Amino acid sequence: MWYNQEAMKKISFGNLMVTGGAGFIGSNFIRHVFEKTGYAGRIVNFDALTYAGNPRSLDDVAAKFGERYVFVRGDIRDPEAIRRAFDEYSIDAVCHFAAESHVDRSIVSPGAFIETNVNGTFNLLQAARERGDAFVRFHHVSTDEVFGSLGAEGFFSETTPYQPHSPYSASKASSDHIARAYHDTYGLNVTITNCSNNYGPYQFPEKLIPLMILNAVEGKPLPVYGEGLNIRDWLHVEDHCAAIWTVMTQAESGTTYCVGGRSELRNIDVVKRICALVERFRGPLPNGAPRESLITHVADRLGHDKRYAIDCSKIERDFGWRQTHTADSGFEETVRWYLDNPAWVESVRSGEYLRWIETYYAGR
Ligand SMILES: NC(=O)c1ccc[n+]([C@@H]2O[C@H](COP(=O)([O-])OP(=O)(O)OC[C@H]3O[C@@H](n4cnc5c(N)ncnc54)[C@H](O)[C@@H]3O)[C@@H](O)[C@H]2O)c1
Image (cartoon, rainbow, N blue to C red):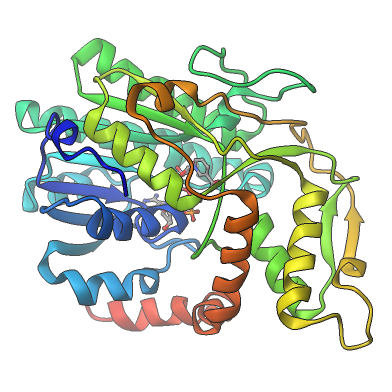
């Protein structure tokens, strides 16, 4: 990894709270910080363990980093729980991932998105503000979906006006504004990243790429919205984690950075690539048909944004950050990971980890 250790000394903290650290990006981020950045402090993973949180994704980290890794089961909708954890662990920085994150769920049940993504972010900012000078950085992890939808041309950048469409993107837009307001009004040390679609290991299989991998392996239908012509800019989760760490340790307070993969693909092409990879590793379907024959077009998502694409030249220019995975290498690595980790996949799909959580916490 190409981290500039001198530049990172600009912001120094030793008790970092990562919210939502049992989720997809948060768990990758915690592993990345411990293993790749030279960070010598403690990480407190504050996570409510909703259906999307799986503490088992960090079994290796817990075993390897001992007391430097602490897991707290807590809900960001509960201001007292946040304060208790801030006090107990002398939290001096936050990297905030915890969110309801699935657009389809936000269309069915928007209330949870407002409570966690909007009110929860407010509760965290308030707790950070109350720590005064002892608190050095609040990094808010956000999405490019806050900018709305693009036509065939153009890119989102740090100066694009907000125009969210789904309850999910509207809740994230709202939390971005509140985080920025805490910087502008109270001088809280805040940075924000708006990132495009992520893929990689430990992603809950309701999202496009893991869902398609697992269904293609099992010979189940591959549901594609409409004609599958919507375009997303795909970034490997490890490149996202490196971008977040770079911004949170090097960027000026009050700044925002857009992060993207420079890798625009139509949904249908993503699914076809995954089918080809699964076929390379596992062969065609038992009846000899290609895995692609499982593609099933379904009614389009309500208000489905047409195209997202990011101009990430600011983070490239300011810090030399670059993507280290292409869609070719990253998709292949990801398909392999899901094939090589059946125990994790099974624990998530069967709800085994949910039962494990209940047993683990029984009587605590
Ligand atoms: N996945 C992407 O492609 C993508 C892209 C850009 C930005 N983001 C943002 O990154 C963040 C993480 O996304 P993800 O895909 O890892 O999500 P995820 O759904 O996999 O994980 C979310 C985590 O937050 C936890 N959580 C949910 N509600 C909580 C609450 N009330 N209190 C405490 N913890 C709670 C869950 O248990 C889970 O561990 C989100 O803020 C999302 O908006 C995601």
